[in-house]
Amino acid sequence: MDSTEPDHDYSATLEEFTNYSKENTVSVNLHAGNCREAGCVITVIFNVIIFLLGIIGNGAVIWITGFKMKKSVNTTWYLSLALSDFIFCATLPFLMSSIVTASWIFGLFMCKFNSFVMTLNMYSSIFILVIISVDRCITVKFPVWAQNQRTAKKASLVVVMAWFMSALLSIPSAKFREINTNQTSTVICYSNYEDHHRTVVFMRFTFGFLIPFLTISTCYSILICKLRANQMSKSTKPYKIMTLLITTFFICWLPFHIISIIELNKSKNAPHDAIFHAAQQLSATLATANSFINPFLYAFMAKDLKKKCYSFLSKIESAIDEETRSAFQRTSITNSVDNRLSTAV
Image (cartoon, rainbow, N blue to C red; front, side, top):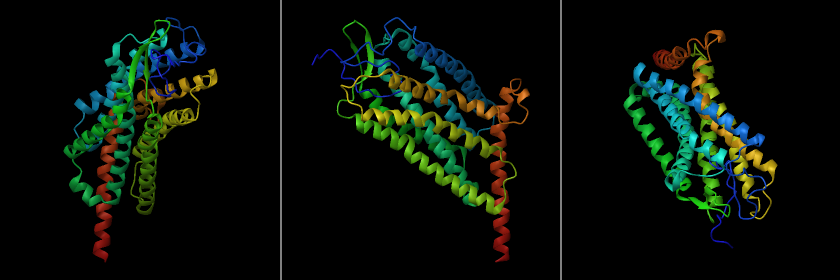
């Protein structure tokens, strides 16, 4: 075995749009300095769109929730979600460069850092969505406690803890990232998990999808049952927004996890066929797209779509502000209902 060649693990990670292996370095990969294949061109175009819309959209949410609106629990959640997506979108130019040139020119540190940020975005996004779901459930299920205990300061502490856990779970993405120069003098940035590939994929699927999915599903089941029983929600927009956010996340990330699991059963010596390579690119691009969709979900929830483009910033603020008012309204109504029940008893 040639020690100068990377022991590629066929890991379907976001940063691996261009895959290299010891056995087949050119059959389905993009040639260095050449991006003429349709798949490569489409991938680059999509990433340029995601980068521009992600920076603008998430930047707008950060500005509004961070500087224009009064700090609250809800604005803290959405500010954190927008920050995660904004940081991820800011690293896309490095990825686009590697796709176009099929080479990594930014050194080992950026190779590790880029992979770390991408994985950090996946974990932090889903953790924040889980936190929001649990928060909604607690607000409706235990309104008195929520009214006394839900503060922006505590919400900020929870967000810090979520980011800390996300960073810990993202360490393997940086630790096992390496650069190497292949036989054609092309520098590549790749994941060398050695014997830890299954562990990393299992960890990503478990903490980045399975547990969050079960937690969110449980919270929403409790939430829907409680709301239907008390009929205390006058506005459904906050729930529509959250439902769309969560549904979009799982639609974007499920193919990525499926491809990662499928790869575990692929032999390292098996040809890296073009169809599977296309599936990798598609699932990775779809996962990347999640980072620019969220802010547009806030803006396009209103009824008159024709006016959306002319009032994008105000719609984002209005959607988040309405959710904040609705949360307080639900708590007040629930307190009133509970007080009447207590008096009757």
